[in-house]
Every structure is written in structure tokens, then in C-alpha cells.
Image (cartoon, each protein chain N blue to C red):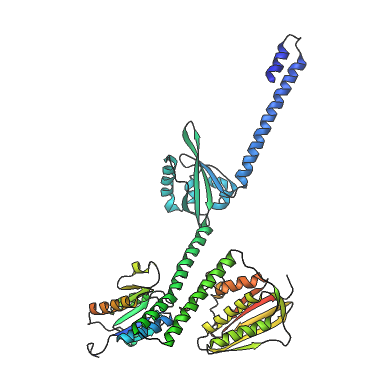
Length: 129
Length: 381
């Protein structure tokens, strides 16, 4: 698929189903393609099935947390950008890379997504299975 | 008095043996009194020294232990002869002894030593404890000669504080979760400039989630603070179960609730609201953990002077390793789901059931659902 002809595809990973619902609605309305997964492992399965342009992931999740997911991506040599979100007071300081604190203003979130997509090198290695 | 007696004895009268004897007797009596007073004083101090729960040790300038009390020996799991005459640092793990001795010298020389300090020590069995020590000094001729250490084991307290801190961090994190959804929903409505029923329903649902968490926190404070009151009145457990099931049916979760009760009522002296709360909690857990819907069975029965109520779900079951911890305070399993509350429900339920003189337990097998049972005494306690 030509990157220029389709909207960016965003994978939302959060164990709060209701937050996933609202994020899917918001991002779809803005014009992104969106899918969601409810924990890090499920997210990893999604990533392998269909490589997203950006991942928006919660930190605290069952099975595989957001930081471990980011680490797994990095170890796989993937250049897919990942924005981590958390309500934890100290989580922001521990994250290398883009971070959005919960509860967020949707404008701040959308701006962070747009900026991260712009900054990302489009030539990425595929995710190994 | 002695001097007066001497006067009398030497003043003139022929050498009176009897007087001398009486002088001697008085002297002896006085000595005895002094000794008794000394012995009593020592006994009092010994009673304090031996009876106090505070571990105490005296040590000299070089850190050599002069004496220790029984609480000290109990705290470190050492006999007095293993410590007395040795460096106080025997209570530290090998690799930390040098640092501990240096610190000791600093404190001994410090004109304003800290009022207390914490240390991690090791018992001969390898177990490590956190202790808090207060140092005081015996001063002779203006110079410190002995350090008096009073030591308290604060391992449990430290652990409890950490648990409390973790809990507060977790609770605030969890309270922010519905707020995140709520705020995003409201902003999305604002952005759309249009009303829609589904968004408002979602917002209301978030407020219910928050209310439930806050209620749980309030319950926790009541339970922990011993403010839990049970207003006992005749209650029919079967009637209570039917009402709780009705409350579930209103929620339209896609689950069916079947009630099995005997024909005759099962009446005991219980608190209807508190038991209703326990039932709501068990039913909402059954719903939450059987995602695919299915049947939830509530059974009410009585046997051996006990009323029993059980809630059985068709969920994934609970791993055996988790079962013993399920009713613990602040316990949260690996399987905690994002939409759940603070994880206090079962702990509060246990406290409520126990306040009735009852018991609560679970039987479960992975893949075959779980059954939570409460047993309540039928007779008034």
C-alpha cells in the first residue's frame, strides 16, 4: 500500500475497553484508520498481523505492559513510533519517547500523534514474525 | 542519729559494752537498709531492662558490646554470649560491617547525633530486619563512655507503610481511569457540537464507576477503623438473594441468573443492607469474570445451624495460586481487568461476613468456573 494514498493506521492498546471505544471514535473522526487491542500481547499479535504507522499504548496492562511492548518493538528493530499513556504520577519520567499523561486533553493527544507521525522515518523495517 | 549515740557512748559513763553493741546494731541496720534500697532499685531497673519490648544494648567507645537485654537477644536471634565482648556490628551482614562501624564512631563523636536512625540488619538464620535505633550516652567526667542503644524492629511497620503507599498510588491511578474516559467523551461531544445518547450514557457509566470506587474506599476506612456496625434484624436469605438477582437482571448484562432456594424461608438475625452489599459484590464479580455471558446460579440452603449462600459462575475459574490471597486486603491478581474497581470488593465482603460471625470462601477450577460461598450462623451470637 502506498503510504501517501491511505490515512495513517493507528493501533490503540489499552486494557480499559471504554477508553479504547472513545479513542477509536475520536481518531476515526479525525481521519485515521484505527484498531485496538486490550493488552500488550494482543497488541503484539495485531502489530505482527498488520504493521501500524503508530502505536498509542497504555503503560499498566495485564500480560504485557506498554513499556515492555515498546522494548519488544525496539528489540525487533522496528521503527514504529509508540506513544505511551499513563495516569501514574512518575511514569512520564521513566519513558523514553513520546508520552501523554492521563487524563488528557484530546487536542494535546491529537497534536502529539500528528507530530510523532511527521517525525517518523517512513522507511521502516518490517516486523519479524 | 549515729553521732548522737556516739556522744552518749563516750560521755563519761563506764565503758558500756551494751552501748557499743547498740551502735554496731544501728550501723548494721543502716547498712541493711542501704543494701535493701540498692537491691530494690536494682530489681526495679532489672525488671525494666528485662521486661521491656525495646531491645537495648550498652557498648563502649570502640563499639564493643558490654551488655544486652533479653529483647535484644530475641530481636537478633542471638544468645548474650554471642554478642557481649564482641563488636556490635555482628548484627550486620558481613559486607556492611565496616560501614556500620564507621557510622558508629561518627555517631559516638557527634555532639548532636540524630535522634534516631534506621538500619537493615541480619539474623543468624539469614533473615533481614529493618530496625530503628535511638542512641543515648553515659557520660563520665564530661566524656562519653558508653552508648545506650534502644532498638525497635520496624520491619512490619515499614512493610505496612509501603503497602499503604502502593495502595494509594494504585487507587489514585484507578480513579483517574474513568476520569480519562469521561473527559475524552465530553471533549468529543464538544468537538462534534452535537448531542448523542451513547456518549452521555458512557459519561454516566464513568460516574457510576467512580462512585463505586469511592464507596469502596469509604467502606475500607469503616472496616479498618473498626466502625463497622451490624444492625441485626430478622432477614430471609432467600428473599435477599431474589432481590439481588433482580438488581442484576435490570442491568441487562446478557447473563441469566437462576435462583435455587428451599420452599421455607431461611431466617437469621443479620444486617440486610450489609448482606445485600456482599451479594451484589459476588454477583458483579460473577458477571465481570464471565465475559461470554452464561448462567449464574445462586443457591441458598441451611444445614448444621448455618445458612449458606453460594454464587456459581461459568467464568474461566481462578488459578490455585491466587485462591489463598483472594480475600486479602489490597490483593490484586494478574488477571485484574482495566474496567474493574479497586480490588477491594472481596476483602470488604469478607469483613462484612465475619462481622456477622460467618465465613466466606471460594472453590474454583481453571476452565470450570468459580463458586463463592458465605456461611452465616442461624442462631443469634
